[in-house]
Amino acid sequence: MECVGSNSGELPAPVFSIESCLRTLHQNKRVVREEGLKDLAAALEGFVSADDYRYDHYEYEQAMDRCFYFLRSGSATERKDAYRAIGLYALTVGPKAEILILDRLFDVDRLSGMVPSSPSEAERAVAAIGCLAAATLACGKRPADAKRTLKAIWEVMEEAGAAAIPRVLAAAMSAWTVVLPAARDTGGRTPFVLIAKLLRADDPTVRVAAGEALAVCIELNILPRQPQPPRWWNDKRAESRPGDRPLLESRVSELAFPEEKHAHKNEHAEEITLFRQIDDLLKRNKQQIEDLEKIKNNERPEESNGPCVKVPKRWVKLVHLNFLKQYIGEGFDTHFHLNLALFRDNLGLTRAAAGDGAEEGLPAHEKKQLRKDRDRQMSLAVKRDRQNKTKQYD
Image (cartoon, rainbow, N blue to C red):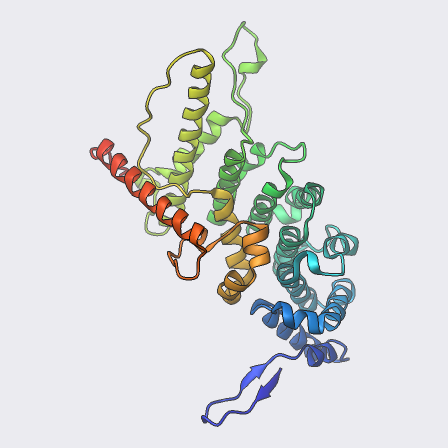
């Protein structure tokens, strides 16, 4: 970092220079190189404008070449910080990058970076998983790119080393969920057996990650198996299997409405709220399926009096926003307002989707849609309150 002088008596503000950073990345001292990686990640976290990138794109690509070198032969800290810098670079530059970030990530180590051999490697593994998910979101051009990432992350979750560390397992499940919409299907795998298993994990972050995966699958119309009524005495279609819809619904209901003697509501309030939303989503989806069956049979579907829990409008966008907020960190607001190629054009996320309620600077059609959504949500809330005024959760 270089500094600019100030006459205010305050400490000079650090100014990032990619040329200076590139020199530190080639130093012999490991401590200096690690400092350079942190400076690079901090600059990318704060967002590099298109003009700055066009002017210094050669230097940034040289820095990325150095980061990929660290993935192969750097120290543990260098590898972790290099993964973060590569992921942030992918989010910043996206498909405009002249280097093929996704292909190079798969060429470097495939699974070795994402699978920890011991708990001490958990931070590096989480960084590698997040880097691959971020690069796929920003640079994936075809569903095949996302499917390749889904397959790699799924293999990580099947590894004993990753499954034994809740933090790594939760990160892998979340990354799998984030990439799933771009793949358009699960690549021939049935995720519900694993989701059902993770919903019973002791760690709440793993349960939440599994719940979000289930919600996104339902929203994408990737539905768990529904056992059929038996037609004869040994009809195997009626047998219950792990990952079947009734078992998933039962477990989600247990997490949404825990028994008083086992519930620590103050500690798990956010988790309970989340699973109540997922429970409501499952009930609404089940009602929609039943209504479609009635329509096929020329029957009139009944009006639904579902529970009055506010459900996120789009689970896919919610998961994308949560992932990017956590991954980018303090620079999220800057990216959200300036990185339009990623948030608006690629993922379809706007300030209205983020829920900050700011209308200033929005295009006219977005302002109109935002007001329309608010009015509709208010009408639905009033209607639900009237229908369910005698119902209480607790």
